Image 1 (cartoon, helix red, strand yellow):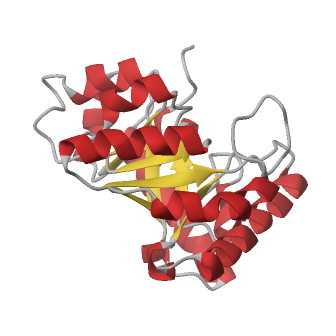
Image 2 (tube, rainbow, N blue to C red):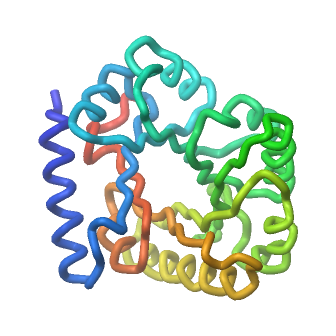
Length: 231
């Protein structure tokens, strides 16, 4: 069995090392532990080791864990990082600190509607398909800026930045991470409140070092913390 506390300690050491060589401040990097398919007990183990930010990809699985006896009373910062269908938005509004994976204007509109009904503010990221792979979700890069004003004007939700899942090839991944960072800068120039646009959610277990070098503020790590997925 993996020692999750040990894995987290080792990962933080690696993050500090990458930050040192790339001139980044480790405190500017939010580590999100991706716990999809992992039981609540392992999430509790990570929390006990100091891991506050937890990422889930499937709505029903998230709801079961978030309401479980082991986790429901803990001040976990939940991140929804998986593909989000409009008809599932209502289930997570008010329960997650950040939605990473809004890939359509229509889904953002639904998020706005549901947040308005609850009279709350929901933070979110727009997912960009930087690789162009048809198997990946995400808004095409060239559609972001033409739609930016619509995203900015939706009530009760705040666009905080961008998210991507890169190609498995590390050379391509670096190019895609750099593309996302450039897009965020362009988005800031178009924004009525550029100070809100602070987040680049990019990088996973196999490429988080490159992502940090290219400006990531959030990295999503599962395997390096919890071990291989069971399904």
